[in-house]
Length: 95
Image 1 (cartoon, rainbow, N blue to C red):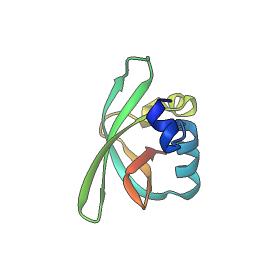
Image 2 (image 1 turned 180 degrees about the vertical axis):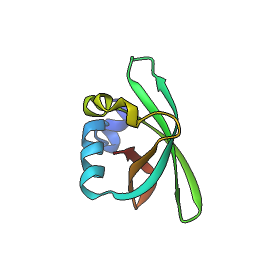
Image 3 (image 1 turned 90 degrees about the horizontal axis):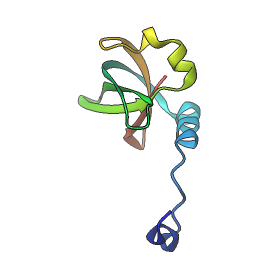
């Protein structure tokens, strides 16, 4: 956490809290996996697209251990459920 974050009272980013929040309160739509990647930390990412009100959104999400067990569901071209924050449609995860 940087000095500016402390001055402005920003909390550290917690990806697990973000995921829990979206699973509890996010709305669901359909999406499509367009790519899979391994990031610099060795985590498996899926890149996906979804459409809301005629606007296409592209995002990426790190797969959880549970999702990795179902790896065949997250291949390019696969249809997936996407949870998104209705107040910030860019904030999304794959189910």
